[in-house]
Image 1 (cartoon, rainbow, N blue to C red):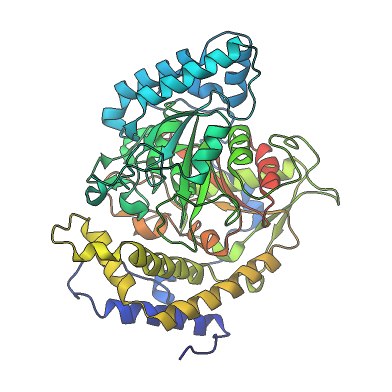
Image 2: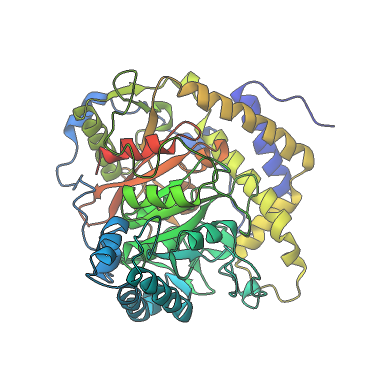
Length: 532
């Protein structure tokens, strides 16, 4: 029997934690790969109020705060990919270069860099050159580029592309059947005359945040190859950051677009839930999965979103980037202070975030603290995300556990076992809690245009690292730190945009996450433009 929905946060937290404990009790107690869930006070010991807003003036001057002053990655491909959509199409129109020249240059760069970077799991060399030649013929006949005409795009390797295998970054799917038809998002790209370069590498089954897969090896960070690219859309972000593609299409279930975008220093959009079709995508969490674009600029991501979205919008792509932000007065940027724990955010992340808020103020915005009572509990949302991913992920991939030759990584095996053990009543009650959280966040941010928080509380982890540094001597499990600020927004389904805001003293990217009202992605693009 389904129990009545709990009312207090503590009740709800206990209900979710109980579901996990019940599921974990059925696993081997000595299994070190079983994912831990932290909901109680022990996970938040020493919690303090965030520093006062006035402390923003003391932001660390060593941090390069301008996302416009992009630093070149250590892995750097063709200048063509760095040009952006508008510049590429202008060059085609003026006959400064052909689509074939652009695509050939990128394919050469992929051949040179990808063996180490591992951003692509498959390259569509013949198909991409064929598409490029056909587009050059159109240009010769007087065609004027629009949409994503001639734009080189990568596709995450959990999205079907007709004529190619979808391997999901796993040995279990290395011999998967060749896809017979394109996913809905791929059809939209083709209709817009984008050039498909290949499949981008992913964390195995899209079930992780590092893209460190033993199937293709770890996808490396172009800014520091000793560090991960993030995940699960790590190959997508790495390819764009390295200049191997102008755009890439990724997916996001708990942060899988925004995490690698932040780590690799590119722009990544998780649109409103269901705004982009997931048809033809190998789902991990069917109630959480989002499809979205990654690019080097806000304008490029805005253009890509306009092509792939399903939800009609009143503003055309790119329009309004410099338009007034509010018809009713000054822009209001909300700060969820109860979500931002002093001591649990890396110092350079915190300084860059405070500097970004100061830049909003300098542009005429009001910074509005959001009361804790008006927002859902951060850790409850993170826990809900994990419960849904494990339960829904096991529904999708749990059958692999019965295979005689199981080659999944141990961590994923443990997650699938936990998911299989989550009861139906626990799942249903969690969905009821989720609905209340969605309503609470929408209500809590009703007085502001966007909510701003760091995309990540820590810097990019090194390959194989299990814990990341926060402030001072504090550390946190990599798996928990990377999703802390992204997973909650996957649960509520609000649109969220990760935008670069500078670099650390060691030249690692830093990012801010802007969260908007449902179906108001254009507002996110416009607000983000103030930081460009």
